[in-house]
Length: 425
Image (cartoon, rainbow, N blue to C red; front, side):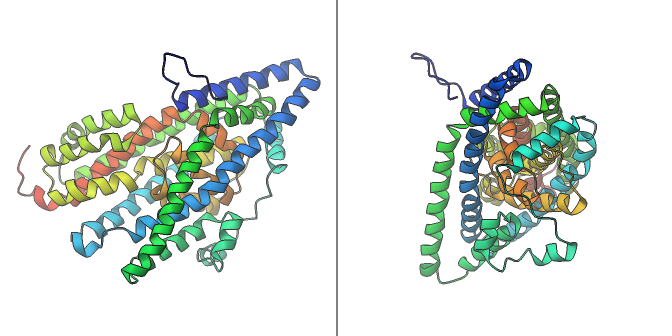
């Protein structure tokens, strides 16, 4: 459903095309419900395989993309000894904030979505249709077995089974090992994974060019089976994702900067505002990087190690807002398909998302795409990915703003030693 380009005008942004595809699919599905008869069966017979094909195309790229990007990121990271304690302290803060964000959403999103009623018959139909095109999810293991399974006996089998968390453990371990073997030997393997990463990103771009069609095909059976409640569910998803992202930013990231960075909330808020405005409007942390560097240097008076090393690294790898919003996304899809998530499943989702945020590709919809293996690991139908892609624009604006705020908050904490001499500003 890629829209034509006006001969004299620019092509619509991909996000707008995907949203139009989602709306058109819902509209057609509702019309089919109203008309009934054989037209509905024919439309579903065409739309369901097309939607499944789109999801399968995404799934075939995401697993190698996640592994390759994590291996490269760890293997090529600067040796912490060359940058003092900034690298180690940054990693500790990254992980603490990411786990906190994912846990925050995992605790609050389920009761909020429970307030949104969806017809049980509709969820049963959705689950049945998803099961017809995907293998059944394995039962969740015990807590002890879950810990044991974190270390994969066979990484290739873990990849084949869609077990993303053990695969992340393998990728991190492989990256650390590559960084410590002889450079002339490690460089060959690192270049291989860099090539895999680049190739997968290009392949994902090609697949995303078909996203309007894929989302259109996925929306038709969703509308047929869920009916009008689907629109209300989508609105609830956007509201919950935005509210929880903003709440985490205000309740955790701002206090982190104020307390850990020994500054006032008002001062940090004024300093962060220009970069936040660019992030909100552009939906790109990279676009906000020049203003972040300027803010850190001139307004927050942070040292050169922060402005020159940390902020570029943070912009490329650290996404505090995504940890919250992605967790909300998975829980929403589970609610939509009537999948009950127990404490162990929520813990798996939170841990996996906190770690996979480091591998989000810098492409439109990148945050949503890496959710595919997370959904599979939690036993949630991945067909919901099309719905998330269609309504991602608004959550992405707040998610990116949260990412930039997290970058500056952690920078404030890491740059604290100089603050004692900075005086009032």
